[in-house]
View 1 (cartoon, rainbow, N blue to C red):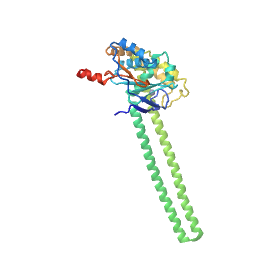
View 2: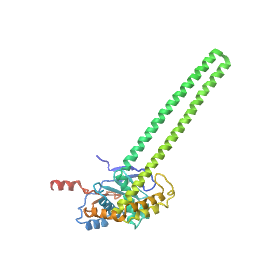
View 3: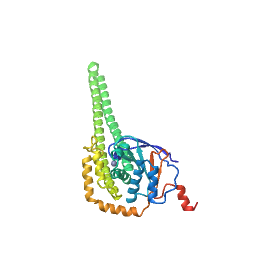
View 4: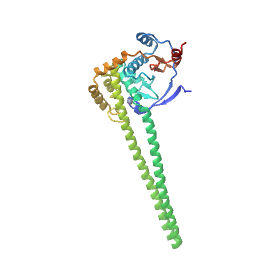
Length: 332
Ligand SMILES: [Zn+2]
């Protein structure tokens, strides 16, 4: 049995910009309403019964999913009441959008569509599953290697230390008196010092390995962001949105401190250059035609609002009701 109320952890690599957050989601939708019969009625109904942000997000996901053949899976959108100019992808097909980005992109559905398509891109490319699984595996491996290395070095140092003490004891027995004690203690101390030195060196190796791992992961994250930016542009433009929308998102992000440098994300100036290159590589007109052809062959997707009204599911082409599906298959 699924536990509907879940605590979801986000990963910074999957954000539009940098972020760390936890997200409780009450996912089970309200009981089904009767679907509207035509596209104009379903959109009118949605506008009437959904909060404005959800209505906009529904229309955006509906168009992007249908234009890009991403309508065979359900999408869930969560609005987070926090002023953060950001959005992220998490769990399975879940997109979270902060109030801050909705506020900053108010009145610009093309820019918001680019953000949503970027997050859908992370899911399409399976960045979440691959990224988290790989990271956990690599960290476990480094810890294991470090423990083995530390243990090996310590054992070697202990052996030296033991032989030094034994040596001191032999000298003590042979030479006797104060001189023997002095030689023994010097040799013993040298072993302890060596042990401390090798421990220090091992810590340095671990630090170095961790830094290398962090850099490798950051590189991978930047690659994921570049891929998601590409999908953000292509998928939103195929859905009929303004190609300049992605550039307007970047203009907003460029005002956030730290946007000029590479982190888990490429710097915003680099992202702007990459989007401009995409606009040449994939002419908006061609993309728009491809998307329109697909949209015209499909029907509007249905939607369901969660009980707590904090999230919206945009249903796949299967619809949102198992009961209706059974009725369709076997009759009422
Ligand atoms: Zn991203």
